[in-house]
Image 1 (cartoon, helix red, strand yellow):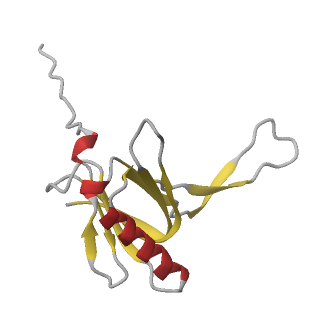
Image 2: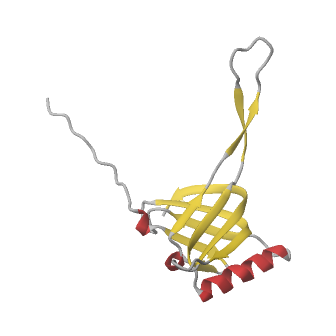
Length: 148
C-alpha cells in the first residue's frame, strides 16, 4: 500500500499585507512600509481551582482583542500618516479598521480584521543602521478571522 503525504501550503512572510484606516475612514495599504507585523488574539482565563486540588483548573473568559504591532524603515509619508492617526485617536476619533493578511491578499488565504486605536508610536535611529519606526494598536472588540 502506498501512503500519500501532503505538503501544506506554507507562505513566506515577504508576502504579508497590512491595511489601516486613516482618520477619514479610508483604508491605506501600508504594506510597502512594513517589514514586521503581528496580530495577537489572547483569551482571558479564570482560575477555578478549589480546596483539595493538586493542580490549578481554568475556564475560558472573554476574548481579548490583543494588539496589532508593525514596524519597518521610517518613511516621511508613513510617519505623517501614523502621527495623524495617533493624534486623531487621542482626540477621540473613531477606531480604525486594520486588515492583516500574513500570507498576502490572495483568494483563499487568511485575513484577520479588527478595529483598533494607536497606543504606541516610536521612532529610532542608530549611527550604523536605518531609521526605523514601530507602532502598536490596541484592538477593541472581536477579531474576525476569515479568508480572502
